[in-house]
Amino acid sequence: MSDDFGRLESVHDFDENADLYEALVSPATRPVHAEAFRLIQRFVSPRARVLDLSCGPGTETVRLAAAVPKGEVVCVDLSPRMIATAWENAQRHGLDNVAAIQAEATRLPAHFAGRFDIVHCSYAFHHFQDPLGVLTQIRRVLNRTGKVFIVDNGPWWFNLMSTPIASFGDPGFVAFHTGEEFQRLFREAGFSGFYWEEILPGVGISIGSK
Image 1 (tube, one colour):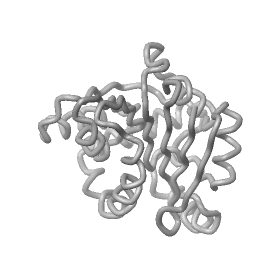
Image 2 (cartoon, helix red, strand yellow):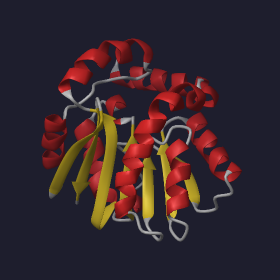
Image 3 (cartoon, helix red, strand yellow):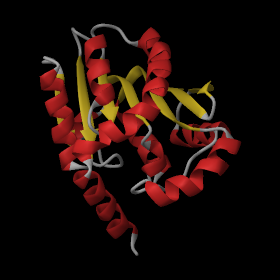
Image 4 (cartoon, one colour):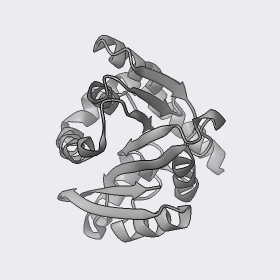
């Protein structure tokens, strides 16, 4: 199977399950998102421009948009149905500072260059077949003082245990990365600063400064 075919098959799977995704996944991810957001919100001003990369159904898009009432959140996903669901969630919450765009993480729109204060990516990085390419794009779209926050599995022991499960049940799963592997990728992508922290058992957050 080619990489392109596998990617398209994964998008189809996410399209098929977009309406159910939040109900199925949120019970497990909600505590992680809450813990991560306690850290992220220290760096988010009310006027910030935020890119929610691989936003899924927009669970965190809504939280981020509420935190930047004078700013904006642009949510991006490769799945058309996920983007539609994220937009619907934002409208349902009465948020008028959200834009939704279908795009690939390694091919973000040219006009995004230098636009964002924050890039947020939660529980999606393990789907990327070209993680260095994604981080290179993230760095491109951040402004001079911008930061990226990536939430995903991280400790080696947890990755070892969870990889077989993810390989079987998670559409488009590619690989989890340890904190050390994230650090190497961030350096190769040209980030000037990097910090990794285990925020809950088995889950970490990678923070990069442009």
